[in-house]
Length: 300
Image (cartoon, rainbow, N blue to C red; front, side, top):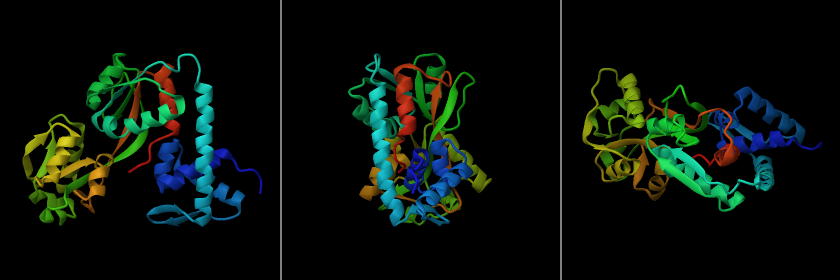
């Protein structure tokens, strides 16, 4: 067998971990046909199938799992090599980052930990606000780099899609009536917990529900919440159904305090995106962004 192409090996690693060609294509900034072609070419080079395809996505078979272990080792080694070359004057410069609420809590911390593990004790300063404010900071030069959520745009800011997020409906595991909800229409008679007016998450939820329910009224809770944590805790307390980022409820779902409601007719997705004043960012923030592009945190 001839030497494997490391680019195809990296594509295989991302596909095998993402379990979906479409998700891997977004993470790799490639088209789905290009990703599929690379996987098929790699399978031809290996002389055997590496993935099991199904309607739900792809999973590595026994040979694929063996190759995935090798691909992870190669990926980690290349990260160490990359880190060695980035150890240059100025690498100890503070990384200043603006982050929206969800990304600040659940995306940035593992990125910072991974970056510091490779590059040493690089100083970080993260400023947190809603997406609109972070875009203003970037446009005004108050922060060189932002990571934001949702669809908001600014003519003075360059956005680069980074990760996919899904807003999921959750309810307390003890709220039996709410756990029976399986369609968006069922929400018409359920208390719906919402973020504060002006919230990007709230706007996306209301727009999606209006599209599915039409003129039907959705009974909302009289309580509005100004943070991810407060709305999650309200749901845990059994006050109603909340729409939150899948990234934000990993611990609660694992602990069994919240359950995700499987709404068959409603799927809400959005993107986490990098925000910069220009496409090419230099300095400490640019080095961090370049590393983060190659080392995205695993999806929940």
